[in-house]
Length: 137
Length: 99
Length: 75
Image 1 (cartoon, each protein chain N blue to C red):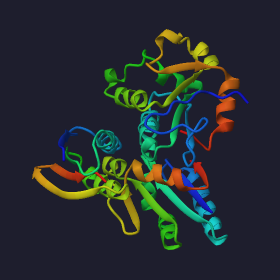
Image 2: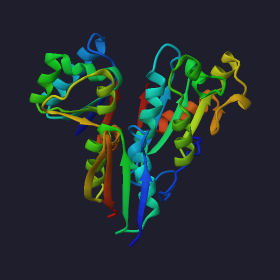
Image 3: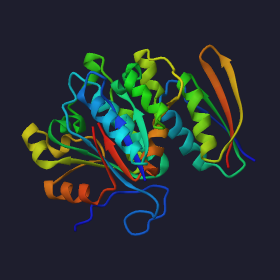
């Protein structure tokens, strides 16, 4: 099974994860519009790093809009997730977006937020299968 | 065996009944259950059957930030906690479900 | 023993704890950190979570309207 490299910061590596830690994946799959759910899911994801588990976020379907720099929630007074993404990068969390969903949304890799990487459906499937906890949000 | 549950929807959503039934059944089978409420899930404190879960030994905690945003006041037997408490549940439980 | 300060006014959960934790990671055992919050849920929960992680809460001081400083000694 192909291993996706999920980074860890401040913890010792044993294989792909430290013994006693969990691989936690949060799946953001809904459109960010007309709801605060996605922003809350990202806020929750930052919190999930607090017990030193390995946290990754995967953007699927309409969720990929949230991984794009095109989004400008400030214009409608909605929460901007800059701090969440800054924390993800600082804490070494994996950030991945489904390539097919990106293509459907017309989002180029160059338009992705810092740290977000486009990956294939099979890589996503491998990641989800290897995770200890998967939280669709 | 410990089951962790995240509930993010309000009590008008079918998820509340699912979580109620799942939690009651798990407790009857001797499984420990910890529920974390966040986002609109904090509104479940207004659901009488939901609060009975706390009496049945289910640990219930929630994101106090979300509760404050929604004007949900403190109640007994529910920890008005933080995302740290969710991280603790996820880290310690044997299985985790999110609704 | 080092004494550091951290201003987290404007921050909400979980950034209140994440940033406190990251700052504590830079310190040595026994060092002290004074963190300022203006988020009421943080005052209930950050000290409790820190104590759960083994750190000592030296004091929690209300220093203004909706403003608190938590003094922490790193485990």
